[in-house]
Length: 297
Image (tube, rainbow, N blue to C red; front, side, top):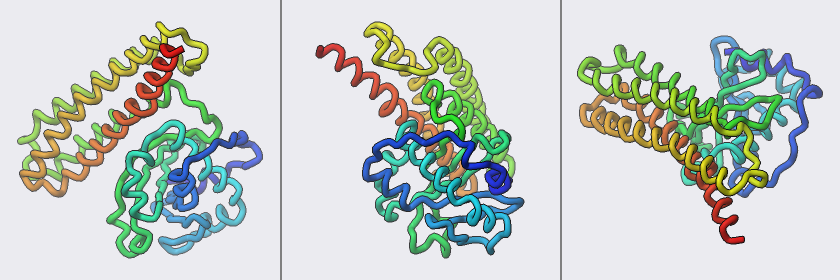
């Protein structure tokens, strides 16, 4: 974990400007109540919205980051929330839990071997009152990816999210031997998940290669827009099939009282559900609205 060290290397003056966008009330409150969790060495350091070091004990590297790079941290938080608003549905679909927790959102950053440029972020929410006393009770709401130097995402960021599913599924299967009482009993489920994820990865990449990386719907004709919408929907259908398989597996694990492992399956299913919701709301939903608007002219 080297997020603190990588951020310390960045000169805020070299970062591109963030173009302001209008955030709805939900994202505004999430920005105001956004906690950061950054790694340094073997430890994760939790920073409050005002950058107080909450846990573990204060670190010299984190203190330097907070003292000398506050503008960078402000930039980072704004960038995270803008990405959530434009390219994600994590805040919308988890709004009930976020609101119940007074809009507390926690962003755990994982640097992706990019020299501090790209990050994978795991998002959680938690009761503010019990954040420090019962930190382990945080609620996982999903994951996203950001590039500090490039806000625009090819193919709505779908390629990165699909690749993440493959990586997460392999981690899930690797954990089975240690976490399950009788791992061989579930061999068929693991085989189905591996095959389905492989199919999704192959088919979705082939579909994406046939589509424009950046879609300007104002410059695309009606016929092409309908076809693009259908192609994205095809990817969503693969995800729905996998989601059903994982849901069946999750239910069986709960019935078998495999408490030590089922939480990993639940988290994987959460990522799948979030991705399906992204298609339904931000991609196919938005494209359908555009197509319907064309027909009304």
